Amino acid sequence: MPIELKMPALSPTMEEGTLAKWLVKEGDTVSSGDILAEIETDKATMEFEAIDEGTIAKILVPEGTDEVKVGTVIALIAEEGEDASSVEAPAGKAVAQDGGETGAGQPAEEAKPAAEPSPPQTEAKAAPAPAAPQAQDGGRVKASPLARRLAEAQGIDLAGLTGSGPGGRIVKADIEAAAGKAPARAAPAPAAAPVAERPASVAPATFETEIPHEAVKLSNMRKTIARRLTEAKQTIPHIYLTVDVRLDALLSLRAELNKGLESRGVKLSVNDMLIKALAAALMEVPECNVSISGDQLFKYSRADVSVAVSIPNGLITPIIVGADTKPLSLISKEMSELAGRAKEGKLQPHEYQGGTASISNMGMYGIKQFDAVINPPQGMIMAIGAGEKRPYVIDDSLQIATVMSATGSFDHRAIDGADGARLMKVFKQLVESPIGMLA
Image (cartoon, rainbow, N blue to C red; front, side, top):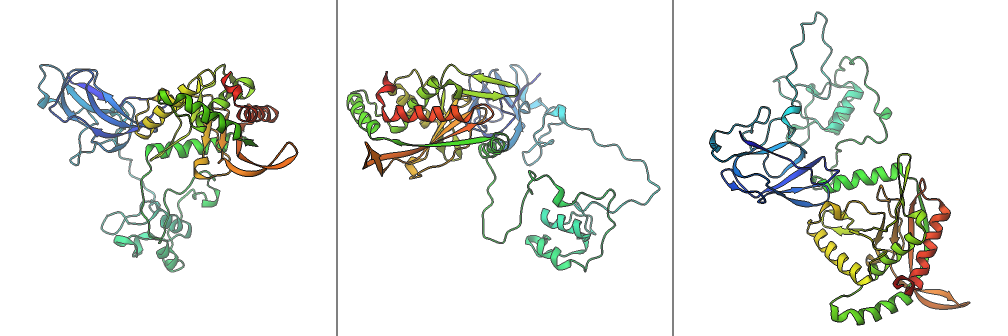
């Protein structure tokens, strides 16, 4: 009996993924530990290993297929002594001629039976819904979603219109031109809710534009970023607190430390030292090293700092675990290694999922100050601006100092404003007197 190879859950939160690339083909013999495919999750591209031995009998999901649900059968492996050529796809998973599957990537057990024919009706049927009008030849009328909604609102029969869009597609301009001219259809009962009554969170699936453009499909990572940031801004009451921090002492200490670490091949960055400062501040103000979940508040006894790293497809936050207890040299080494693998899409889930707080540094882009969005379920994130020469009052005299602005975003459900202010004060003190981070 063939072994079903199913789409794996490569992280605790993974529900679907993209089968980016097959590294085997039908007829190949595989052993436990062989790499079968590359699977793109919401954060990284990961390798999928075989755990059984046998021959790849059938590949049911072609490479490049998006939104493959976890648990979907993606291939069949013939066991030793089994004729691979005689293996058949399970019911509901037949391979289409173009290489796709029936069932749109859903597991076979989820396939729904065909609807039974309804008994004949004695009453006259209502006109067909405008979302799928039929042309006289039985084919589907080509119309944009916006044109369909406008036609429905104005009672215009799309089947009687000639489209001016690409391939004869009916677009917004055709509806506007036909307004008041085309025969109205009988309104379905009950009447559909007006567009204005739709929930504000429901956005149209597409839109019309005459501006030259390229439509690019969202990657799994970009979809996840969009979903999580929307969730964060809609459900988390953010409070923002900003302090100006002198960097001169930290820059001086960094130069001295780098001289001493040169023989070990370590070069500290300002960001390495700010990660350490945030971790130390979180331990000194534990009221901010928390997260909220339902009716529970989680208080953490370790500072795991997630660090925002820009990568080609979006943003990822590898974690420096226990940053409060690690020396700066180790933080620097780990950060360099994690950032490198993040840009290659090779991070493991445990390396970017979790964390007790985050830090995001946009100073290298010359950004003076910004408000970062909290990374749920964490309770805070520190936004770091550029260090720049500014007029600054030192010992009651106006002098020139290297100053940066740091803004903490706090989840006001879990962290009071006064506690957030204490964290910002301690962070400022640690950066301006950085010897305290080494104690």
